[in-house]
Amino acid sequence: GFAPEQEADENLAATELGFGAGMEAQAAFKFNSIQDLVTVPLVLLTTDTSTFDVFYPNRLKGSNEDCALAFPVSRTVAKTSAVGRAAITALLEGPTQAERNAGYFTSVNAGTELNSLSINDFVAAADFNGYLNAAGSCRVTSIRTQIEETLKQFPSVGSVIISVDGDAETALQP
Image (cartoon, rainbow, N blue to C red; front, side, top):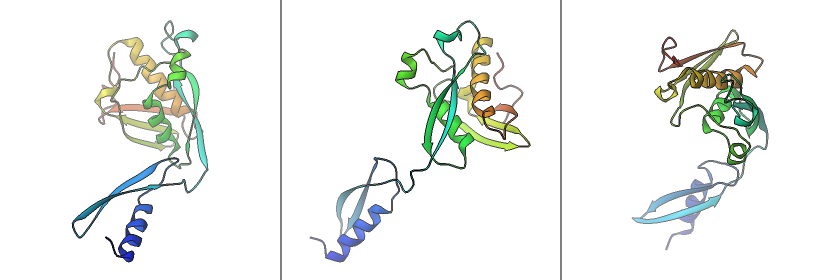
């Protein structure tokens, strides 16, 4: 068995691993070559949230006919100062099943990731990995609209520059 002070240390270490709503942390600790798995329920330290929209095309609202049509869908996340990054991350996750059932879809390829996002003088510069690039002018227009509208909802963003692996010239060319 463990000495009481070892048990106390083990429990303390597990509670310091992190936090998340309804999440559990699992950590393995090794004492005297005996390994135990500890599961501790964790609670959010704050209930403050950030709410924003992500923009998706909708086949029931004309997006199949007009590639530049995208519609807002609300997202709420744990409060963050990097709300632009949170919005793009949420956009890349795609519509929920309920939203898909209501006609929403995404033109963004699976595997697309945000490399960086900076906002200076009302210009957002969003850099993505190579999965962002797609073929076809309609699809490219739709992707550009999704990203631009998602970022332009914020007062600090007037225009958006989209790049792939640092290159804005060849990004999203049909």
